[in-house]
Image: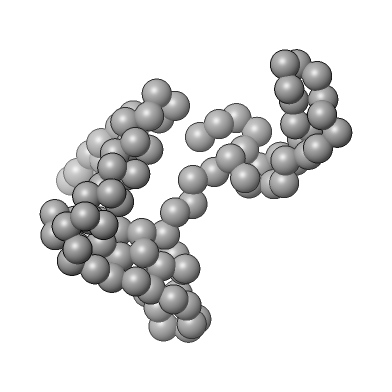
Length: 94
């Protein structure tokens, strides 16, 4: 994540404040989609049980190869971004 992602701050253009401000959390990728080899799902809620059970939302699922490929490209651009930081693997507890 980008440092200060949760802060509101001035927008800059060539080092000079523009008078505009960035709203909180606008520099966080909070996409709500899942993509596999054959299927893509794009939704309006977090992908956890509580949200599916307690809230209404919109979800679009497709097997369209074109859409699946495009969404995979979006995921790959985020995953392999120069701004990402590797996470250590979890170690099994004994």
